[in-house]
Length: 450
Image 1 (cartoon, rainbow, N blue to C red):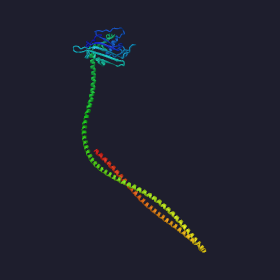
Image 2 (tube, one colour):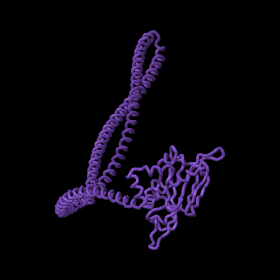
Image 3 (cartoon, rainbow, N blue to C red):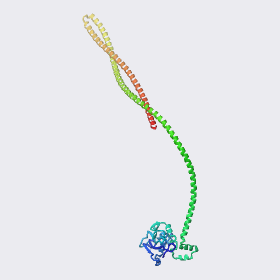
Image 4 (cartoon, rainbow, N blue to C red):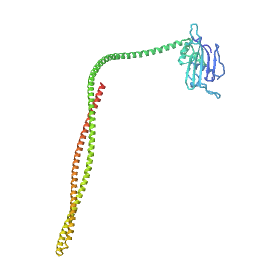
């Protein structure tokens, strides 16, 4: 390999080639090109062509068929029986990039040595390196434009390409000569200028569309500005009206608040008076309830006395009835005794006429019996009178108890009516008190709102 020829590449020189994991180069291999001409000699199959493939691959070759493979992963070292396959392939080119007297360099990179590299991993990902930094393939092609260095330029002429160059048609031969003469840079610049011009035309068309859209938006903005001015004027008038309305409402609410405050004070006074009345009513109701309880207790006591008097009256009536029966029995026995006396007197009179001295003992006995019967009769009559008096007293007591019961019943009814009236009055006062509290709350809310 020799210096790369070209108008701007007289001083651009390939200095070193480094391979690792690329095809048959499993280990890191370095080729130093430190002489004007360097030849790589070896038998068939030793990997001479792999060196050329490495140069084309690192310069951006995308066709696996050109690299004598089926897929791009074929450039990776596939391994042997003794060595495993490589997980990545890396190729690096080192170029001398000296500056001339004017300070110009073959490559537009301010370095004396420039490296170009390419790395491919087994998972299919790859990247390019320019001067030790990751870059795009386009960056590498732009850096080497018009230098004769590239995967499709004349810097690499493999077997059979000389014959193809001689047999090429004038157009292909012209491209080769233009590349060697340094015209390719201007051709690429022209293509780039044409692309930029087309892009500018597209941008100009888009600019016309944008201008039309902006004009439409400007017209809309003018209308919006007019509406905004009208809106500001109306908003200002609305603010004035709202302010005036707020002042009017404030004065009205202040008046209502004063009225509500007066009503609140009146409600507070009414509430205090109602509470006083309620307290007095509660005290009076308590007194009435105590009187009612006392009257009820007296009524129950009188009712018990009436029951006892009624029992005593019934007992006296029974005793009177028994005394009457005994009196009737005594009178009957007295009549029997008178009849017996008369009979004995008659018998005694008959016997006296016969025996004049035997009658006196019979008359004495009869007189004694008559006196005893008269005494017993007097006792029975006294008992009957006593029983009659007891019965009359019991009846009188019963009548008095009945009268007292009726009086107590009337008193209880009056107290019950009074209590019911007091309860109704208390309920009315409680209702008025609730209304007063409601009015007070409303007045407080109105005052708070004001």
